[in-house]
Image 1 (cartoon, helix red, strand yellow):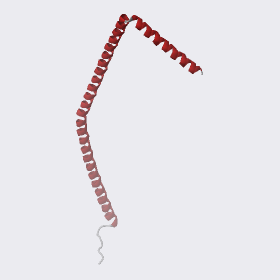
Image 2 (image 1 turned 120 degrees about the vertical axis):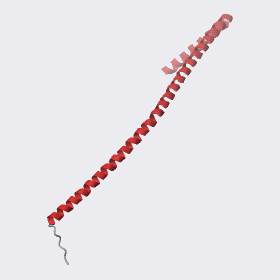
Image 3 (image 1 turned 90 degrees about the vertical axis):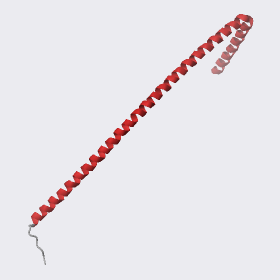
Image 4 (image 1 turned 135 degrees about the vertical axis):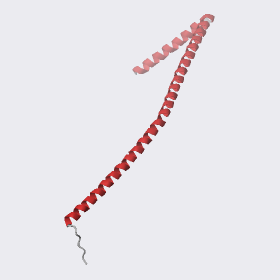
Length: 128
């Protein structure tokens, strides 16, 4: 037997459309809740990472500052040592000239002659 529905076809179509719209709206709300939950979880993780990164950045910054200070101190110490060595060398040269004036003058003359010979040789080779 054929069962004929007591509702008109238009009403059945409207009810089916309403049911489909309700199902779609439920799916949209469910998706929104899932997205909100995922965003909340992501936000929480970002905050956790930010909290963990701040102390690490502070520590790295402190270490960099300490390394820079050590570098500056090393340069200062080295320049002081070089100044002291230059003063000692100067004092030693002055003492040598006072003790051995003739030898010092002969060494200076020989050094000057050697330098003049090198300059002449270099200027001649650059002209050729």
